[in-house]
Image 1 (cartoon, rainbow, N blue to C red):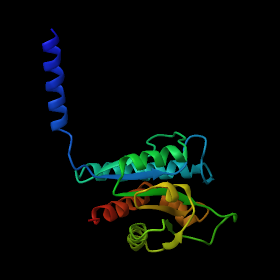
Image 2: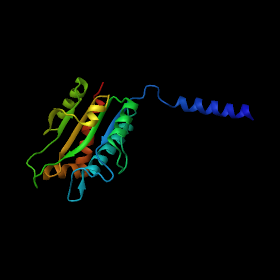
Image 3: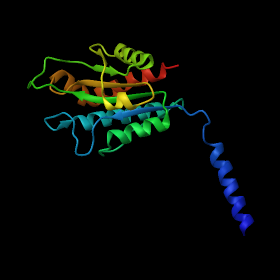
Image 4: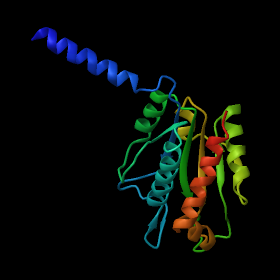
Length: 195
């Protein structure tokens, strides 16, 4: 009986390991906020929902291509701590990390518009920020910021503010199904153009 169990465990391990890619490359997408942390929010539309929807769309597209595996720091409406997110990132050592957020300003209707991209104090992170910026017509690479995800992630990481929730044009784009798919596709292009 002992020999049979050993044989079964041995066969299972062989089969399981034969289907695990040796050189799996990860991409981490971090949908900002979640759970009771709505992020910015206007007229029932919240940052946590916008970022999660776009992150899931990126994951669906990339994972269907078999080149990378996308891992989300949250895949439901949960509130995970920043340290938990960066611990996951540093455990996986992904090729890149893209943290998705939505901007806001004190005005009822903001004249500010477009994406703002922050990066780490490293060339790979800066280059990633520039490549993302090239995909969006009204984006700005802001520069380095002392933000937890940028400071604590050991992989090239950027934080992207997808637009201003209190700018009507940005809000309509980020909350429409078509806009969310287009935003996700831009990130997919950046990921697929990586070497």
